[in-house]
Length: 188
Image 1 (cartoon, rainbow, N blue to C red):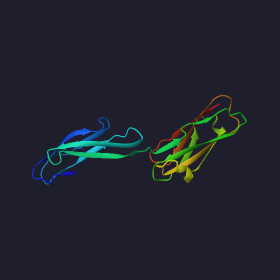
Image 2: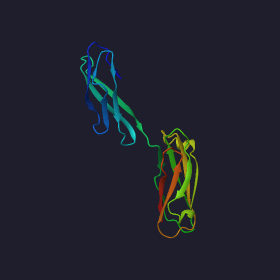
Image 3: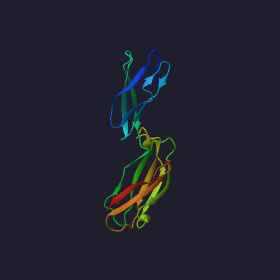
Image 4: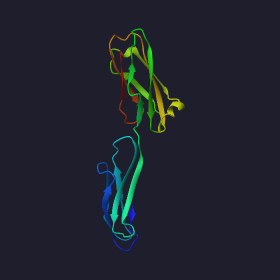
């Protein structure tokens, strides 16, 4: 909110923004009478994860304050992160059992849970076992922004057919409005 505390009308005009593609500034009223106010809105479109800092400058007709700088900053996080994004099992013999783990970090305040799991290929689904458990605090600490996490254990059981493995684990998380996430499983 920009308030005119002077005795003359205060004029606001757009000067510039730090990023012409992702940052916008909007002035509610460009001329503010003495004692009145106007809202200046600075908006920014997130286009990648990580820290951000954007700004907008508004020019005024006030000789004591010819420019007003508005800044927004923070850090963009996804709702969750899966590590690794794919499971690779190399050189599994038909009689072998191998296991691998996925870490799913959540950046939302509620405790993350896997509420449903499924496989994309029903032909080999019975050759995989998936268990989940809350992520231990020591592992959760690996991501300073994570609020909670789930450790997903994937075991390949004996009996897979010879050749390449092409499977996906489908996990439904308890995050609101979150689609099913799919993690590819590959190998030979």
